[in-house]
Length: 449
Ligand code: TRP
Image (tube, rainbow, N blue to C red):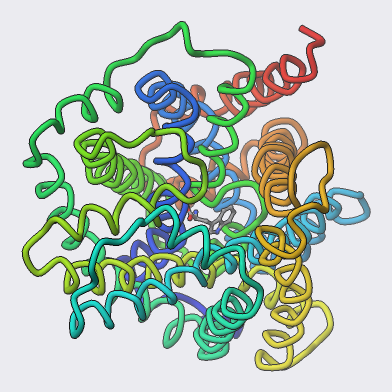
């Protein structure tokens, strides 16, 4: 706890680990590869990278400033920084988005449990000929087990959040993130050494700019926000736990670089294998669950690797889900004076209701469609491609145009004790570049420009 009795991270390393824990997750290992697969590979990678630079990182810094100044959850921080205004709506929209993302996130993370079980069985009884696409299809369209695993994942997440900022959130990330890097590096090396893997690397890195259209731009924007955990106040909430002497610029930069690195590593583990096995890169959300098991099968000791991988995937998802649940729990705790435990369970319960629908949308509720997409796709699209960019838009506008520039500079330079030569550039980006880019992508998507 710090002076004003708010929870805090333990120090520089703890902050870094918790933030990397939040950023690195299914977004890197599951979402990035399948989106790159559907949106043209290398061209998508470059657009995504540009959006991380001109929107993601500036928005991340903006959230840090709001959170560390506001010393409260995302709603409360806006209330403190802009009293008697309606800016707190941005906080509320973020809390709503966090509930939605936590729900569909738990659906996907839940699947990994089933694969842990399958891999464990394979260690003891080697399977015969398996059709991995069929296996995945059979499992994820059922009702019972996907629901059970989704609930298990939510409960573990709740347990970490319940354990508090340092003992739960920070500690979990500090242990699990290094493990994740190790595993991903092993997988990438394995995948690249497969015969025929070069095609995959070419797909991931060679940009074919003719593939870029309005949808690709919107997807890349959504992915940049999603992947950096920007746009719904998770970083406002975490920002409020960061010590006053932490160098926010360094933190934002190192977290973003690490996050990008992990996405590329995941891409290098997956695409070479996809091409080596003659599969199609555009398979959508099932990509990781169909392709990786096929690779593991070809490897000596593959069942052990598979077992390890899916556990690590759960860990990666867990440290991210924690940051989503914390947004909602911190709001309940601060604003309704609930105990951490009550707040955590209330938040989990609300998300769980929605998660029932996103989970069943692959099976029993498959035919419940909105705009031709199932409920899962709709929740992902609404949250990632609309609410997050919109959240980021308002967050940078707030800091760029409404909040006192001197205070922003003070917060980013720790009251002038560290240099930030590029501050004018930062200001220009959050005032013009980032908001206009987001606006242009939205308008292009709805065919106004
Ligand atoms: N960044 C995480 C991932 O890539 C997901 C996530 C966690 C997130 N917290 C968030 C996304 C807050 C948006 C906002 O898997």
